[in-house]
Length: 175
Image 1 (cartoon, rainbow, N blue to C red):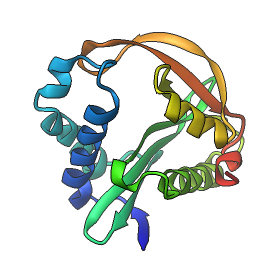
Image 2: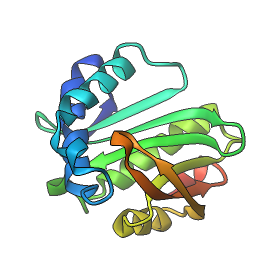
Image 3: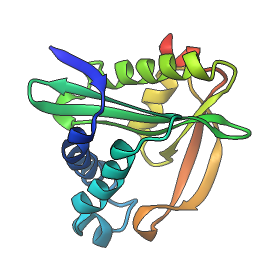
Image 4: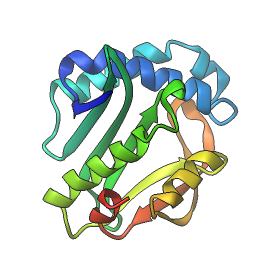
């Protein structure tokens, strides 16, 4: 049985490990190999310790827990962008736990939280253009592709990313 709960500072190591593993499994060929093969877990741990030790008021981080294992997480920021609204920065589910509804549930929970605090703002996220499975997932959740941008991302990779949008956060919670 999957339990969902807000992330706490003691989750930083498990979330960082899942994040690093997910990038290595899913972003090979988009991010530079030197970055993915480096000390990615430690780099992600620095990020997650900062996010969870001293979270800003507009941050939402929810984890999916299966027994002692963190098998997924979502991180969103309310009112992040003037034009596009609230931002879903991360959604990662362990490969062994995919296709069990965890990602959809985490997105619904993020949508419910954003809707309670930022109901009139849209929601957006970035997904690699080449990540067709993630793009189909967000489209099934009702997102629209608002266009492609070329950007430099982690590890100095230059990637093509699609901005997926929802006009209101309650549309995520209805997914």
